[in-house]
Length: 178
Length: 211
Ligand SMILES: Nc1nc2c(ncn2[C@@H]2O[C@H](COP(=O)(O)OP(=O)(O)O)[C@@H](O)[C@H]2O)c(=O)[nH]1
Ligand SMILES: [Mg+2]
Image (cartoon, rainbow over all chains, first blue to last red; front, side):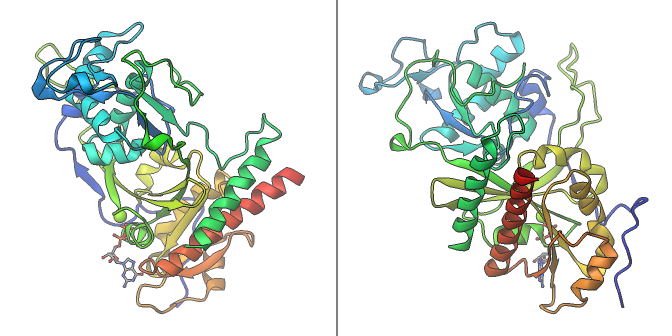
């Protein structure tokens, strides 16, 4: 038997259903109903680096510039309180104060983590994580790495072809050595 | 607002930065997309080589915004479905992280592939020759966008049921698209499929640079 050919004119929908019912609408509330404001072009593989130390929620709300809770004196680094935006929209300010933003900072404290991994670990849709990470980056609470694809050449930059090729070569050698 | 095209964040308004991973530079991130029909072995393929247990996340968000009415109720019910997307990660020497992202397998989710595929090295299209038609959308997608891809026939019972030449003519893919047999459960086979994708991307890049 030979497999039947690809019909370029159109194809049938394949197989069983892969959709799952969303558990709740809560994630959309987190971002104040925003699904595509900022963070639109944040790649799912972009790495997020936390720049602050999340405060212990049990210690109560942290006050910027002040130590919160026992042991805080010995901590030289910043204690996380809701980061401030230069010109915050109400929705953005609310999202920064929420437990989801805190969770993102906890997950990224001390290790680089991709948007996709944050989404999986925090049980938040990728779109929501994008919005929250963009808000956190704007507030200076996180830094985002890998915004430009390392394996692609940029037509506007003649030297980027060689750089991309070098990255691909490292990937090739790395996989081959696994 | 467009996300700033810079890897340098604004000065930390919330205080000084904490030491990060002993000052280790951020890894260079790259990704390869694993596509194909439902239950063709995408998650198995990713899991056979990933350093982390394959993760799953809800990747789909509808294009429109969801309204919240005065009573705090969401006013738009259209967003009641999400799509599970599986992915894994491989740490490579030279501070490189390779992500493998599995696509949701149906035509009606093609709109979210752009997002997954943007910036990818290339793609593996997994094929079950008993359900060959299920890979057509993926083949069409990568072909039409000029994204380097490899067609990998997953040999479910450990046997090749069809000759690669037959598969090639059924798929109508040009000779510069590699066709290989694979076994999604085998780390060695998965490794070979990924190597082939990267080699294909390198050939493309080199050809583009000289031609
Ligand atoms: N015998 C065999 N089973 C496989 C192979 N690849 C996948 N499977 C099985 O096929 C089913 C679907 O695989 P999965 O990776 O979840 O497919 P996905 O929907 O494309 O992610 C699972 O039960 C796998 O264990 C293979 O190469 N050989
Ligand atoms: Mg799967």
